[in-house]
Image (cartoon, rainbow, N blue to C red; front, side, top):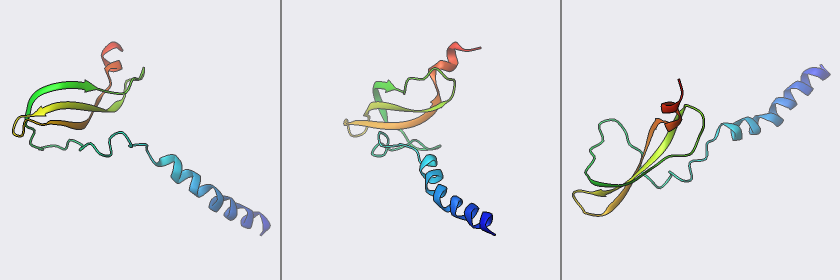
Length: 90
C-alpha cells in the first residue's frame, strides 16, 4: 500500500512538468497570423523571408514580410515549411 501511495504522489508531482514540456514557445509568431490552406493572399511584393537556423531536416515555422497589394501596407505571415537544411542532406 505504501508503494502505491508513493507512486500516485509521484505522478501528481511530475504531471505539471510534463505539461510544461509539451508547451511550445510561440512568442515570436503569436501576433503574426498563420497561413492556413485556402487563405487568400494579396502579396504585392515580398520584402523578406526568414526561418530559424537549424542543422536538422525538419518542419519549421517561417515568416514572410510583404507589401499587401490591396492596402499597400507592410504585412507579415507565418507558415510551416521544411527547413533549408533539407536541401543539403541526402
